[in-house]
Image (tube, rainbow, N blue to C red):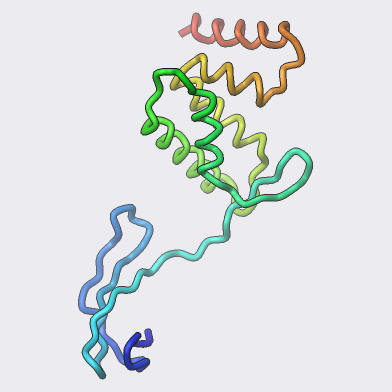
Length: 154
């Protein structure tokens, strides 16, 4: 590691710790030439996850976009932003664990619906009506019946 001040490549590690989230190692280093102390972080290099949309377009996965969709579905409902942020983090983690580089948008939509179903049934139906592109009231009614059948069997 080159020193920021003198640009020499002669240092020693003074302290090493795992970051709070466990995804990086923080190292305090000291340049043996000029004495400057500095911090470096070691992380696993990962390829960004890409979403394959219905039309075949590929875009970078964006957890904020997932969260925004969930916030819109929960508008004027008693669902905390903290719960939605946790759900969005679980969705991102599930996608990263199951897919190496590309995840179909349908998978993300299904994960969002699963999380919303647990948080608030009205938010779930709102999201499902847009995501599944209900064509008429009958499709909407069928989804409500499936929801009540699942809830009734619990």
